[in-house]
Amino acid sequence: MAFHLPSVARKALRYVGFVLIALVVFVFALQMTFPYDRVKDKIIDALSEKYDVTIGDVERGIVPGRLYFKSFMLRTRAEKPEDVTAFFIERLEVDLGLVALIRGAASVNIDAKIGAGHLTGNITISKGDTKVDLDGSNLPSASLPMKEVLGLPMSGKLDLGVELELPNNANKAGKVGPDWTKAEGHFELACASGCTVGDGKSKLKLKAKNASGQAFAKDGVEFGTVRVDTLAAKVEIKGGKLDVTKFELKSPDGEVHVDFSVTLAQDFNESLVAGCLRFKGTPELEKREPKTAAELTTTGAPKGPDGLFHIRLDGKFKEMRRLGQVCGQAAAGAPGMDDMSGGVRRAPNLPPPAPEVRLTPATPAVAPPPPVTPPPPPPPPATPAAAGSATPAPGAPPTPEAPADPNAAGSATAPASGP
Image (cartoon, rainbow, N blue to C red; front, side):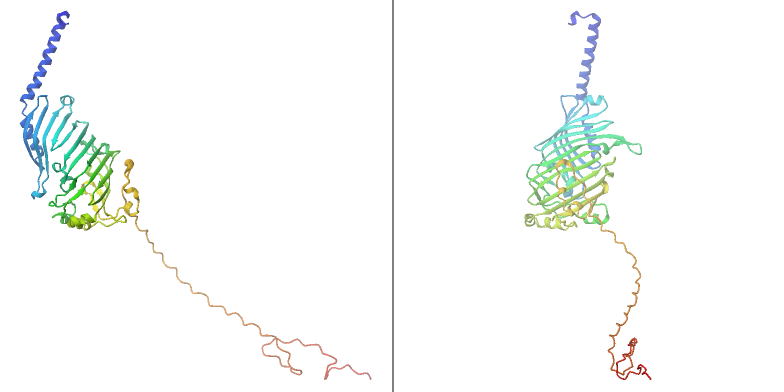
């Protein structure tokens, strides 16, 4: 084909081939000579503010833009050794997306071996947004930063899935950054069987904002171990809301119900939280871990009509308050609090306030009128007195005078006799 092309076309094709070969040689030469040890140092410096970072070795791959980190470990900093949390990755493969770099985005493909588990996915960061897509299976929770999330170490294998699209927008001050009000995605976590929370040595230390809460949480709470048969949780982010749409837990040591909703602000720490934690231990836990069972009853949480202890969550995320109050829905006996089907759940409310009592001034008393004494009944009619009695009975009405009887004896009036 090249034999029949004109000489000008053959020269152009030859130059294009030279350029392509030069690019390939340059990319592979860059891959072979790039100082990946300096990348290792940069990563350690970037994380050193909060973590002690250890990276055993860095290897370059054959494919341009690919490198491997071996024995990658993050350790939190704490005053006491028992409070340290470690996150260990046996082998981390990072694949830099060269095409994404050309269009101004940093795209990293991740393939990590964590114990017997596997974590794969992609993280892409650009001027417009941040996208995260991760899937993990059979991940050993002891090698994950679960203590940072739960406040206690955890053992057992976990499956997880993360999808998040977080746009960047300017805030009120004009600074461009992540805008959580426009975020969309979901987070899923599951333990198929055999998980345990607590190791019998670590104390539960809750973060508190006020002085009294810090005094209570300073030394931590004695906590043994709690067994979890199965756990499945899902969080959805859409429409400016973050909701726990699914939480299922089965354990022979107790039960826990979570109701959690966040009205998102552009700065996540300013988001408003409304939620409720309800829990209780079982008689089996009291026998096996009496201290743990006792601590559950002394948290200050009141017991609701459902027989569970209640803690109400309220306020901004950065200063979320944990209130010892019976959550409104449970107090009303609404069974819908645990119904997570359909992904629609209402935020719990406080019990309705007592009706306002208004004091009304008393009406001055009015003296009743004096009783009216009825007039005495009239006396019975007088009995005609004997003949010759001319005195009527006292108080009796005068008796009409009867006409004179001409035949009566002793009559004073007699007809005049004739001469």
